[in-house]
Image 1 (tube, rainbow, N blue to C red):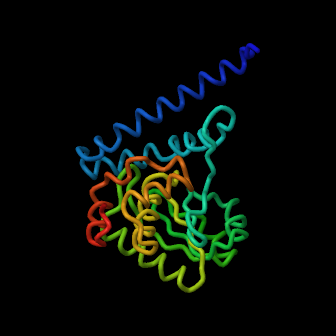
Image 2 (cartoon, rainbow, N blue to C red):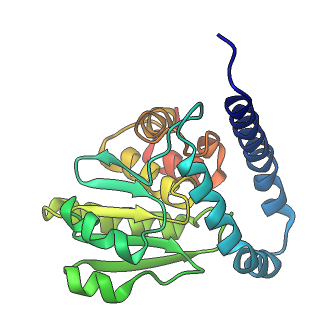
Length: 216
């Protein structure tokens, strides 16, 4: 049967959203490589709230579009997600979260609510649209491993849970689950389908995998 005008308009808007996002993802990595870090930091602050709204829009697109959860469990004790609003903190505690790894340079997190729920936050401030450094990744994965080994659960987040946080989770999978670079990418995409699909191409993750002997 023919679809209604409303459904056709909805389908078109969803296609437009997906096409625009694909274009941004394809070109942002190249732009970051040539943009001075100081300029990138300014742009990230300017774009923080508009792009956060964009993430919310994408997450709300349920019909005819890939479903996007605000967060997804990557392993039993590691969750990769988007920026946790204050009202989300009690829900995270219900999920068993004991620690938060905040990869966002532009936002300090709901510290008051964390304290109320007994959640410990550790920050690794990375500028939006840029990958973590090797030191960031090594320190963050060591920290996550320590918490998990002690029986805790870690919520790893950036703004959208697709780039910075996903990079750390990918490194954790290589380090603790002995996955290769591509196995870690595939596992992430199975658990959280909208992570960046080119994470495995990032030089910092390839260097990390090489140090572990798990590049292939």
